[in-house]
Picture 1 (tube, rainbow, N blue to C red):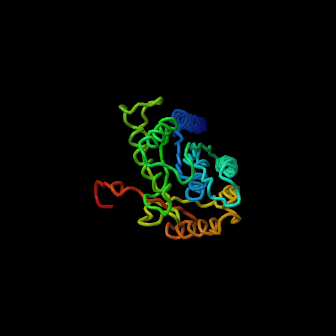
Picture 2 (cartoon, rainbow, N blue to C red; picture 1 turned 60 degrees about the vertical axis):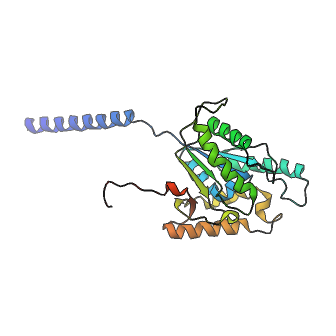
Length: 264
């Protein structure tokens, strides 16, 4: 009996020791650093509609989310002067960003006048250096709106400029952008091919309430049914991805590459 009791005590001590080792290993395991997701849109509202579901999910995972609006899209309201609508759009953009768990920043350009030039590239490159994103989301290359197409060209080059030590800036170079993904937008659909699918299941209700803080989303300014379109699109992409809801992105052709050690 004494021998059995001794064995039981040793076993108990062994379990305690094993638990202590597991706890120590857990305590010493490095925490996964949160990413920074930077969504750069031509107008306030563009990225919230096209990528907002993914931004909301990223925030829930602990990532930092930044929305950079190069213009406010202030000329889109026939009932208000651009100056008045700009002030309204900025308030709305800040409220929507908060609801998505992010922060809003604004470029210096006017709606419809975003220049595809070196100065714009340097400005966005400087913002990238300051924000230090891990992933950049922006417009696809072709669009019926020139501000969207210009944003694509600006961002693509700005990511490179932000990484180069020889480019003068008040911020140090940032080489940490791991991916640049292009959002699916009804205005930017020519040549767009869904490549990356992001599961956004469970975020639909909160996203819908967030983006409805933009007046134009509610249908009183534009006749386009924004909510219906993007909800239906997320449903269709979710069906393809075998998820309840998903959103899709395209990437540069040279990024469509998988390297395997053997056949899968």
